[in-house]
Image (cartoon, one colour):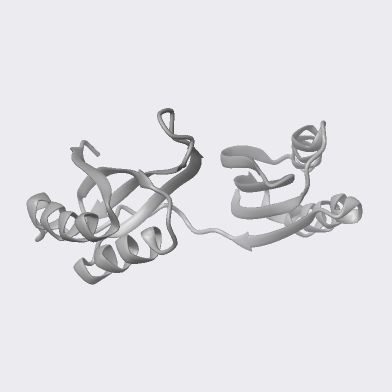
Length: 174
């Protein structure tokens, strides 16, 4: 079986996931992993499938035909998941008044330390006490083996004070 990673974006509509699953199934594919969301009226998805090598080209063509309704599908060959060299996992939560640059500054600090952001979920909602925009982020981080979680926490807390956000960083079991 060959691993493919699909990126899908376009106008959301009922039955879209069903259409994708039918095309994948018709080409003897197996739906392995996915992340999908409705953002600003658009459907956005990431999907990993396993397909027999002799069916890959046909599947790519069929997925391209789904795009007739404005849906764009990008197909990339995926490799096998490799055990990461960086063993430490952490969960980061950020909450504070919304303002430009929160993710930019936090991600810059993490990159400087060699920390990889593996998953990121963000949202803005009205704060219950004031109705002002409240920014929330949750991230799964992969921390280099040589780095203590406390070093990451210290770096993020320095930035948190400037950004006026609360940060929680907890270790996570692999």
